[in-house]
Length: 275
Length: 326
Image: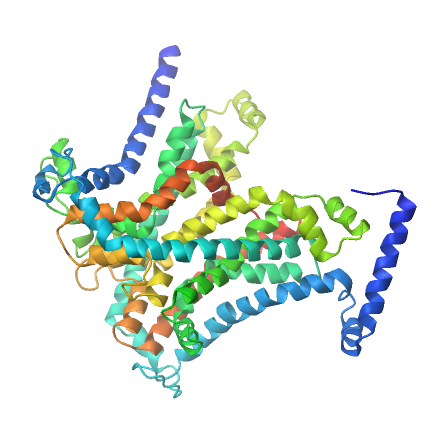
């Protein structure tokens, strides 16, 4: 019995380690390739550690994507903050100020979360052109804020739904109105939820490719993931530059994930399960 | 809270509602509105008004745009210049008889089968393994979800290198003993799209795993114990009790991965194989606009994608609605 248990425990660890190796493999390859000098990029030695560590690949990649990296910061941070605030107010209304049809309205909002953006691209381009925001950073920020309405409302609504109605009622008794209750009662205890939503929006907007490509494709203004795709699409064989560029584009979300993994997990679960 | 006495509180409340009503009654429009909509007064009315900008944005940018796309698919807009001459179903007939569209549908089926099964099977398997009271569970979990933190573009760039026929995975497999292994991966004219689904599943499995793991944690130990007492082995426990209990998660996983299959785009732009062998609806749609300026055809593809998605979204939202009402 005991040997059998030992065997099954070992098997579990063995399989987990194999899975983890699989998930780490591409990162390993990106990392070692990015650190290799151009001469060392030999297809037969792809899996070997670099003979000499060279920062040329990273330097060259940074030269090419640095402006786009900055664009991504300029786009992502305001868009994440604004859409979190919008989501917080909407979630507050959907959770605490029910009116006839508010649940149906909420469900109608959520449709936007699952929409394939291809279904709205033509009108989106047309509308942005008409209001002069096509190809502008501000236009992209606005689009991210609008398409963030459903998911942020969902995340905040489930958070506020967990806060007892008595707290809101007590606020009403104290003479607080709609804004007073939000400002003095809910906002001060919303920080955990803000952290989750900000993180979620930051990751999603940073990692977006399609909307950035469509709305802001000029190489100078494009977000970093569009720039990385351009480098990869040019069929260049400077794999060290490609891998370095990919790592640079991935760095902010990787750092955020490693530092705030718990919050990231919470967003992951709340975004799909809770009604 | 500065609550003094219940009597005072009641008085304060009735006072404030009275004031609110009197304030609104002053405006004839609002008082007419009140008669129609009895809930529309005081703070609930303010809440609704604050929600209006979002309602308008969603109504225009989501519902309005979908309808607009549907309309564009019925007109003759096939150059860079807008042309709203109504042509009926001409674009749709053209689309459905297009060879490229048939490739797209083939890709969709293969990709969905590959992507969904990998994500769900491996996601479930890893969650079950992690649920066995593992040492270092947090580390394992962090690693498995790790790829979800990076973008599809980064995923594509890494896997394009890994899928190079002369090196990458082929080389690795040759090194560890499969000396004659050779596959073109994404460049394979028949199964290239499945290779792309491997890269996509690498990125997304962690998400599905997290969903399963959270649900497994929610199953009380007493239930497992009870099943053991009744003589169920590990296999029976999972087959008879745990997998049926996880059905809502599996449903969510099917919807999420199904949606991902319909709209796969980013990876295809980087990993695409020869000609239309790995073409997808989303990529076809993008090229129709930005390469060919065939806006009406692109709109038809986009509308078709929304149509397909609705078969997944409608039941999913329905189940969410039921949950919300409980």
